[in-house]
Length: 439
Image 1 (cartoon, helix red, strand yellow):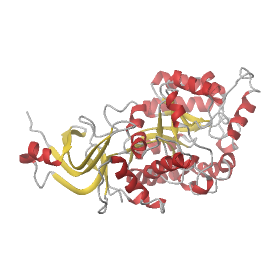
Image 2: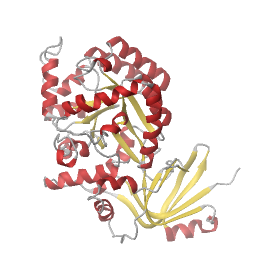
Image 3: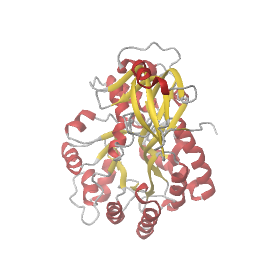
Image 4: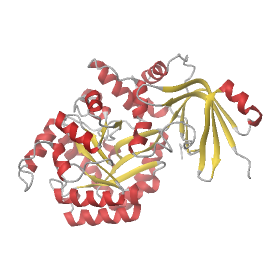
């Protein structure tokens, strides 16, 4: 029997457990064991205990000392549009106007495969450098753009092409038959890595949502779309659907998705800000998840779309699962550190209790893995999981006794220069393999 091949990592560790707790080791030791697929976590413990337990097996060749650098599990970004990275800093006075003026023209460029390939190589390199190793991704309508995204993505991602069959620019509009056939091909090619993705009810016909939902359910695929981001969007959706056969008496945005098969355990609804108690009850009963995108929903002066504040307490009381997303390019930055800061800041301004950094860390890591059904393998640094983690130098920051205060000091020290969050991470390990971040 071959001997265990172990690797050892020394640093400051935070290991998210739930909304209220994280394991915290000011000086800790992460022990990983090589496997055929990469490496899995064998142990996480205080350094002093770790040296007593593993000292004879620790050598200069298998031990990496990161000093007081902070080590966290990699992030899960549960709602982002990889094809919108170039419009993340465009003016956002109105969601629907922003889509028409900037987003749709940007996505039209992906019709050319060579463009999609170059952008895919660039974007997913950038994404892993931000410490994001999993999540749910929106592509353009183009089949090859999904292929390129899945080709270059590093980690655990589901990706889907947005489906647009009505109320869309001519060059981004497909027939119902084309959308359904495309969904069939992508599921056949990528299996459960394909995510059935109507852009939102405004642009996708009920027939496509029903047929595609059935295909996705049979294949065990996830489904994602947008729900109740702004009052204007909701009013427009209802004005459209109440004129369609079978929807004349529809009472809410959520009911439209219920009637088209879009809700369920594998369904991810982006935003969900303006939801009634009845809608939340439907989401809870169907086990549908909400993905909160605070930097995108933030006030316009903070580079968001000004959509409103996500009422996470009401969502939790309704028993609805939720996680965090960057919503790039509605959100201005890819960093989940910025997303965590925005979540805490917005709730603090509204005097909402419970929006802590410990909670934000859980919702940016393990909560996403749980929603995707991957939490037995990844999402935090528990024993037996993939050795996937990120390293953030603390540059002499005095270590407090509580994880909440550590995250607060580290994240808020960069509030004045949000773009700097993209530079905090110096190392990313994916299943035990250190990733190349600058090539």
